[in-house]
Image 1 (cartoon, rainbow, N blue to C red):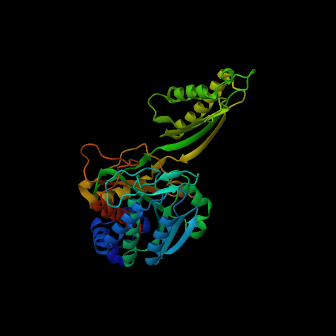
Image 2 (cartoon, helix red, strand yellow):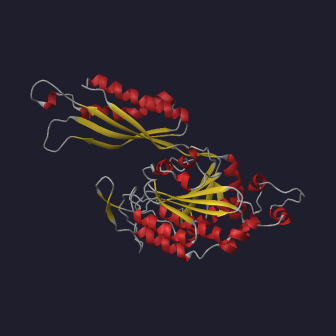
Image 3 (tube, rainbow, N blue to C red):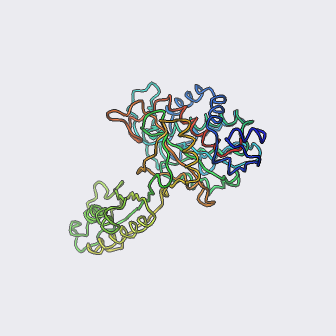
Length: 435
């Protein structure tokens, strides 16, 4: 903790009046932050090893038992107060370090059911049974292994630098992000009875941009995503020939093929909205009577008003399609929220952006609005916690075809990606902690 004179010098203020925490959070001196990060950055070889270990031993959503245990061990070694088993396999750690803001930082535990096709010596060849009973290949194709390694590195850095700041850290390792239920599950399981409610939340994600770069912006950064699970019932019909019944398969296919057109027509051709079918099931082998067809939809939007119109249009279109086909029962249409719209709070993202610009210089760029989705903001929704979410690059090159997140070839370059992610999260936190 610096003296009043030290604080004023650190933040470039010559006033004789003490600065408040809010003033400090918006005017940090980048050179001071740089000196802290450079001095207290941990030996990243430890976290490179963690990255390779977790990359080689991934676990699908809801099944992250071993990953959570490895993370918890690292945090206990850092002498954080550690809570496990929250909302499934979620891990939360707390470090109280005097008065000041409470900063929540989050990374994700889960991997994807994808067969890895990289040639890395530490590639995943793992298969496991998911929570639905299906045996699947498993890969960290989204980069959550790098997000975790970076957050652990940041945790070690900030713990070592504890004399240079004051406040409270809340470190979250969230399960089940890929199916976007883990954040709500942690909140529902009493997360904030175990850790303090944060004043600010920070999240980041590795992406296939140039390694060493960071990207942030204010306002919307990621789309909202909803799922619709639909059941259309066929038959019954007179006689014994099932081909004379109402067949739910062509009914469902016709409805699906028209949905995005109808939604776009209703919400406006220039609005950002997509409707995709990502699951379809009908029939049983050996049985020529098709009782029902079930399908799942993925709906992505960039505005709350468009989101509501899209859902209404989809439900109306499905009901109208079944009515026209004379199905014997009304369709069942159930919507669930996969992820809310991710919108950076300007007071947080602009402060972080200024620090990034000063520290990373030309490697700090403006983040593009992307069609990925996240449930990160759900962690603070109930308490209206402001947040910033940004990307950091993981690709050695951006020339030619570059594997993207969720590709079987996606594998971030370990360095300088890991150092960039570690430094970026530490800088963002220090921007709001009293120094």
